[in-house]
Length: 308
Image 1 (cartoon, one colour):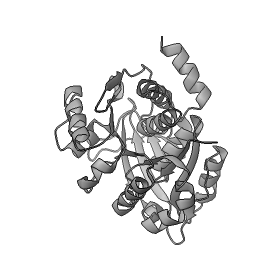
Image 2: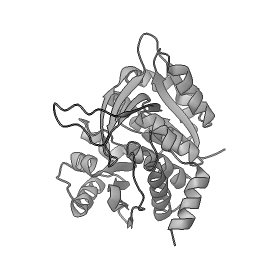
Image 3: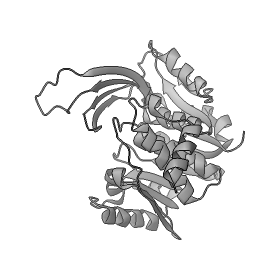
Image 4: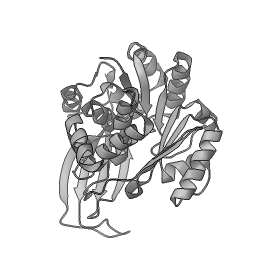
């Protein structure tokens, strides 16, 4: 298979509590439902891309705990190349505590664990698979020095980088022009462009600021208001598909993984946005991060029904 997508990023063990509303400060919400699944933005995007039909390799660090064997096996079950999923000694895998309210909104706390062992030295070890990449996909749950190292390496090898700057946190902004594709929500767009973003017009302004800095494509997801991509030559917007959301935890990750698949397959920007939006719409109707990612047939069937 060609068009290999190399996802470099995090993996987590997700501990989920589903409740009728998120607790206020000092409040205890009882009668919650508990679910343990696997997540982490990197792993979510790798799984979403693989199920969407992509040829995917995952570069990641997991810890030394009881969850590790099943986590890796799950990647293999989705036909993900796991040769460079490094198993670290003396540390736990990343963990996330996720509370989900009745409307699907969530609050998340993450302990990075082994994710912070994904150093530039590990990237050097993974060069054989990076050399095969048609695209590199990253997030921001790994060390800043690693993100910068991958961007520099990809630039030298002329490999396009799709970076989902999530979560939004401090970064050396001089690297932004080196990124080919930025995928951001409104909060992340405002953070990177250093301008308030509270509506679609302000999101477009933020995208224009980032384009002016040298980014080739800026994609901003707007939740129920859809998503758009801006380049120097065009702007494409697609509306969100209307579904009944139960868990939005992995919506952005599913969007990123499936968008990468569509783009490396040669689909147009509009087709890629629609494909990714459909995958994301299906995802939010299900509980859990990786369990919610749809497969290729589901996405295509959804699009046939929804896109006239």
